[in-house]
Picture 1: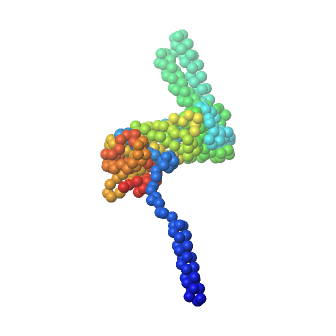
Picture 2: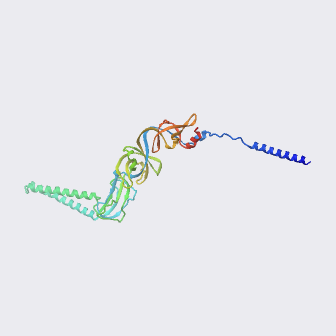
Picture 3: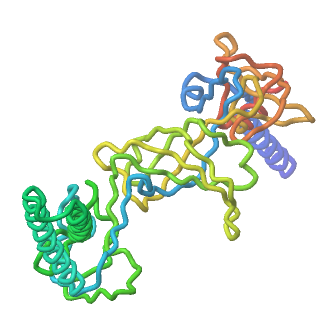
Length: 365
């Protein structure tokens, strides 16, 4: 009886073990051979760069500052000393040629007025004297010498009167001792160093106003010593301003200043820019992109597209048949943001510009 029970227990244990073993084998999954698949949706998410045509032009970026055109700028100094009465113009105002900027009372102006009155009176006397001497000469009561002296005196008085009136007009032309500062050109007041009730001394050497015609402005480009050889007069430039991120201003380098600043070690180049609507203001900072000649005539791509592996360069080229293929290339040189290719790529080829290292590792044999 005991042997029978023992045999039944052994059989039960074996059955349970076989059942568990069978369940375990059923739950084991056959491992799959996972392989990278390049889908159309993945390709659409990639950044693509196009191989540019063979040329020897490259773009270099520099910083610049917008300034007024010095050839269309006037600094206005007081010609006399005095007391400022009225300043109707504010900084930044637009003014016309001949418009009043400020008025002053001046003792010097009163002196100019006195000289003009005196010279005018002396001229009248000289004119009457010539007429009188002429009549006497015609009557035989005076000599030709006296007539000639009267005429010479008239010429002197005419010159004196002309000089005194010119001085008066130069200083505003006012005969009441008031000096008027007027604008010599149309433009904007870019500097103002005067206020009402201000005293202007005879030794004052500071300009009271600066007026600039801003119909065109200058961009003074900062060129570092290492880039001087790359920039030439006549190079085309594209200028971008922080205030107008979607707008580009065009121009050409009109002058290169052949001097380096001792502190910053930069050389300035000047670009004249048309300024319709007066969008560009003196003092604005700008980024200038200059198209320069680099002496290289090979197709180019952005350096970020390159893959370096086993001392060789590769790119991933979009192919209509294979979708993306690995292409070995020969790199001539890198210059700024361009890599010049001497073999392996043609103008118009499209190459992958993002996630290329991951794709390269997945696609290479």
